[in-house]
Length: 196
Image 1 (spheres, rainbow, N blue to C red):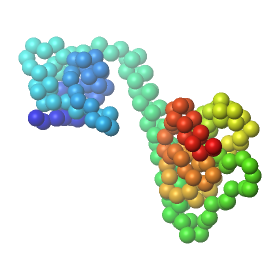
Image 2 (cartoon, rainbow, N blue to C red):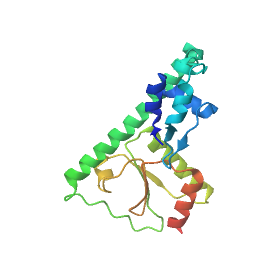
Image 3 (spheres, rainbow, N blue to C red):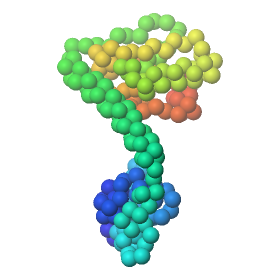
Image 4 (cartoon, one colour):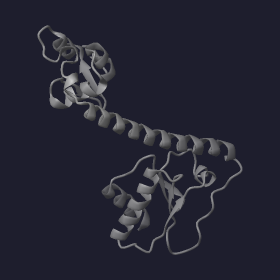
């Protein structure tokens, strides 16, 4: 059986990608979900919608969206794309600096103290700041409110930890998370394992 991506389905039905996704979530269009979260739609489902007399044919429901709803959707897409571009630009900059300084830069050794060294690596984007705030909140809830969390923004210092994707959490020079914002529960589990 042939399966189509959401984009291919949208092209076949002459609908927008958001409309096809809405059809999936509303149950008007059956799909299979891959482990990565992508939807695949069987060719038979597309043929069913294209059958004569189907009320969803060729975007009949597309006009049901108001201009305000379309504008809101577009603004959300732009915001998400800007966040992703910011994250990718920071990751590319870190990787380029890592490659340039791979043989000459050595990360600073943690100071000899009783406390652990907890670092947030990131140039200061929204996700980096969110990871820093979440880490401080989790440490406070764990009874470690006096544990300092240092936000490393210098790209040379970040690159010293390797070609990582920011934001990243480093405890005692070991990268524990990279490129994602873990849930509060997952972050607490990670910190408990490495701070005990």
